Image (cartoon, rainbow, N blue to C red; front, side):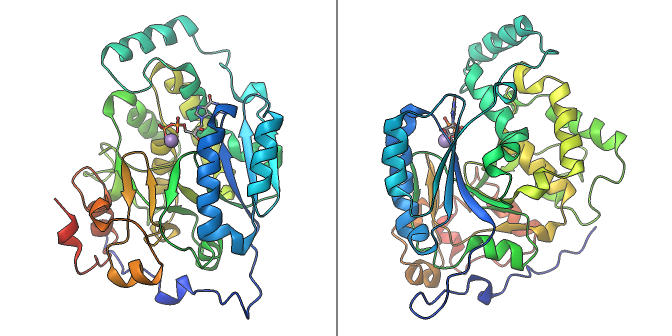
Length: 349
Ligand code: GDP
Ligand code: MN
């Protein structure tokens, strides 16, 4: 059994920048959102929120990607709200379409079967293209080529606390690669054969797994089976050089060739998370435990009173998901030997 070291992140990691006296640093980074024209209302809400809490002081660029051209209305409204440069990109058709080796009749049959099981997005083709795009293509888009780090933002999310430090600097200065804020269990029915494909890849690529990996976060038996834990990828602050690396490229191609993105409904969250938990040093994964956040029905709200007050959070600590039953937060704390906030039990069930 590996001995888990204490987290290396110190208090000064989140060093607050004195905006009056310091030059605000700028990393080789961008915020990015994949969305549709009809997501305008929701993305404007997310932009206003993250600009208020973070980007109005940092002015990072914001890249918007779409499989259809953005409307003039979308570009006009969004450009006015972003304090950095807003850039709008069209996704090349070959990154958002069926590969030749996919049997589309079989894909349709499998969608129908999944729909009968009542799985969310079971019958959606576009959702599958979206998950595959986020898994294996976004970081290859021409507009993202010049950047190393990205912050993924979806429509209709909330940021509850001031981010008066630079999350990209946190990653770079501490040699981190993948940052998350919420973790959760996946629906097994969406990925029935994913783990078999992962094991097949590991069998063919011995040495791909890092010797100090975080495999115990995603497996209860040291990698024999998948426990469905993953980082919720609607929020990500991460290093695209990882997705651009040979091991990840080989991994994605291996998964893609099985057809699982279309015959099943593999999400980019388990794909990214499994890769991060296997191929990275466990110390390269970072929990942004101060970035209060909401997407849909789940929130991360810092339950530590010092953090909540000093970061001027506006969330209800009772809404924090981290220590609840369906979250993988407790497991993350356990396998990384991380000290829980003293009052965490009040926010567990
Ligand atoms: P959920 O978070 O899993 O419920 O999925 P979402 O519907 O929020 O989609 C995830 C992300 O992909 C969001 O940023 C959406 O705006 C975006 N997205 C989903 N489907 C499409 C699509 O067909 N086209 C484009 N351009 N973006 C999409
Ligand atoms: Mn979403």
